[in-house]
Image (tube, rainbow, N blue to C red; front, side, top):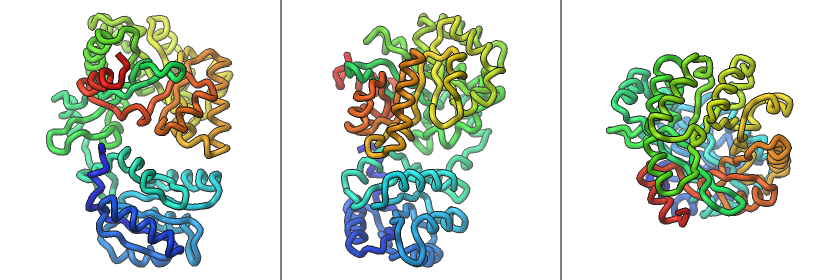
Length: 402
């Protein structure tokens, strides 16, 4: 178990008006090592008890409750008690489209939503969610973990080459063979261990440090790719490219120099740019995107479905693949709205002759749903979490992809 043990000894509050469902949830959380486990019968009771506690690491709440429902409770936590509550999760038996809407409400409130669980709560589902989420308790604070790291600390981390690539497999759905991987930045911090981008990436989105880090990161990716390709030729590595860097006049030439000096072909690297930021300034970026494609690099639109691109805009852009956001992938089989968006995205990729890549593939049901729709590539915890280069090589050997 990757992160499950890190939740042991953390406090949790179960908010549920049904005594039987509350007892079930309390028992599951206690079995997983949470302590202490607090109980509340509704939103009013929960707010009263939360106000008297120093903090609670996780609040798991029902939605349909008397006196104060779960939506109102989450709104109150966001407005008055966000510094006291580290994570929230929702459990409810309401229709799936309502759960999807509630998830959007929580996301907009800036609360840290752990999961939306159907009722009755099941231990294996809770274990899966906890094991896929690194709580990063060492950086917790009322202002949020991402604000605990200063720009100076990130600059020092870059200088010491502590920000390194971890690799998550991208697997062909048609034949279950390794297609490539996405290189994701992780900070191997000497004091706090391996940190996710949430705590430092906001310092690396533009400016001189962003360029310096990107080129250093690309060199590290190329060094690892040489090892991967020696084991399995034909793989591709995706690298996230902050959209502001597309305005740097030296970007294409510098990238080409780095790739060629490593001995790799340019087409072994795919650059990912996020839909929302790119489409807000597409005209200014098209020239650089065209030059990148002319030089052989692959281009992927990341997090598709979260922005406002149209088929017309996509047809004029030189993308080679489209990455469908995890929001519309995981558990789509049980959500008619998610499934409709996912189906449309895969169909559009087929019409535009783009490689379709689904993010957030976590279960066999996710995988089978994508296979039924004809999606090309899957990425997510169903195959592996992001791994260091050494661990990725081990995964390739042990998973039968070599």
